[in-house]
Image 1 (cartoon, helix red, strand yellow):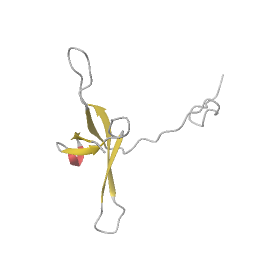
Image 2: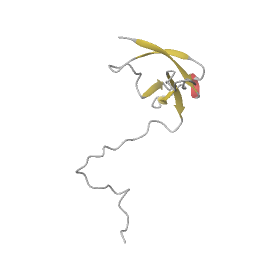
Image 3: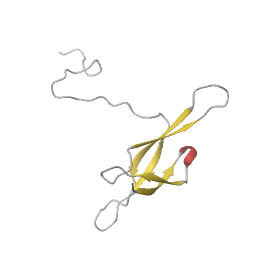
Image 4: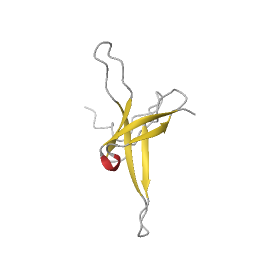
Length: 96
């Protein structure tokens, strides 16, 4: 498998560059989670990093690669939106 050296910004891995395995599309995963074990019997702390574009070239606007940004709130929860499903409790408000 191929890997790519990817820099990290923010959080405990700030400034480090780690080799990240690439997926079948040639991109690193959208989220990178780092579990850190706790010493006093508590559950491990998990630091989450979100993949962001590293920047763009001036002339053609091509992407320069990827960087992982620290997400202090953790990984975002995603809900699948199927065309046949009804709106959930969040989107359903009083209709006038």
